[in-house]
Length: 411
Image (cartoon, rainbow, N blue to C red; front, side, top):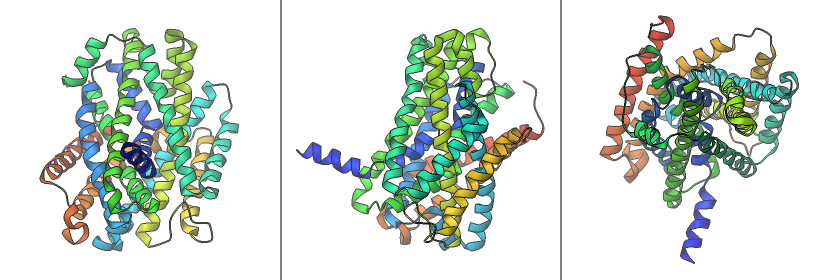
C-alpha cells in the first residue's frame, strides 16, 4: 500500500525534469550524436558518462532552487543581480534560442520531406499545431502531451538493437576514454557536451517547476524526476551513436545532418530502422520547437517582471504569449525562405549558447549557495566541486570552439 502511495506521489510531481532533459535531445542534439557515430564509430561514447554526471548535478541544483524559492531563474537573477544584468543576458539568450528554434523546425521540415511531405505544407501545420497546444491548453494538459511524446525517443533504443553492434567494443568505448588530437574529434566532443548542457534548459526547468507549484515537501520526488530524465536522455544519446557507429561508420558514410543518417540507414538496415529514425527526428524536432520558444518567453518575462505561464491567457500574460507566438512564426518563415542562412543561424546560436552558459551557471551557483535564499538547501561541497569543474571545462572548450569556428584547424 505504501509503495503505491509513493508511486502515485511521484507521478503527481513527475514531468519538468523528464521533459526538460529529454527535449534536450532536439534536432541539433540528434544531429550531433548521429555525426559522432558516423565519423568516429564508438570512439566518442566515453564522453557521455562524465557529461551525465555533470548534467545530473546541474539540473538537480536548478530544480532545487525552483522548489525552494517557487521562482524562475530569471526572476532570481533580476532580484539579486539587477535588471540590467538580467536584460543583457536575456537578449543574448533570445538570439541563441531563435537559432535553436530554427534548427528544430529545420529538423521537422527535413524529416517530413524524407517521409514524402512538402515542407511548405508541413512547417505551417507543425507551427500552428504547437501554437494552439500551448496558447489554448493548460499547463497540466501540455505536460501530459509532452510526457507521452517523450516515449517516442525509445525508438532510438530500438534502432540501436536493430543495428546489431558488437557489444564488447561498445561497452569498452563507453567507459574507457580514447582521446584523439584531431580537430574534428575535439570539436565533436565539445558539441556533445554543449548540446547536452544548454542555457535554455536551466531556465525552462526552474520556470516549469515554479509554475507547476512543486513544494518543499515534494523535493525528493522532484529530484528523482530530474535524475531519471538525465539518465534517459543520455541513454537515448548512447543508442543514437551506437546505431550510426555500427551501420554508417564501417561503410565510411559521412553525414552532416540527422536526416541524412535516416536516409543512409535505409539500404543498410531496411525500411523499419529508416522510419524509426525519421519519425523520432520529427518528434524530437517538434518537441524542441515547443519547449525552446517557451523557455524564451519564460525567461524574458521573468527578467522584465511581466506575467508568465502556460496557464495564463493572452489577456493575462500578453508579453509571454506574443514572445512565444512571434518566435515560432518568424522561425517558420525563415525555414521557408529559399537560400535562408540556416547554417549561419545554427552556428551563431551554438556559439552564443557556449558563451552564455558559464555565466548562467555561475549565477545559478551563487544563488543556490545563498543561505538567505535557500536556507538548509544550499549545495554540498561535492556538488560545488563538480559544478565549478564543469564551468571551467565549458569555458576552456567553448574558447576552443570559438577559435576553431573562425580559424578552422586542419585535422
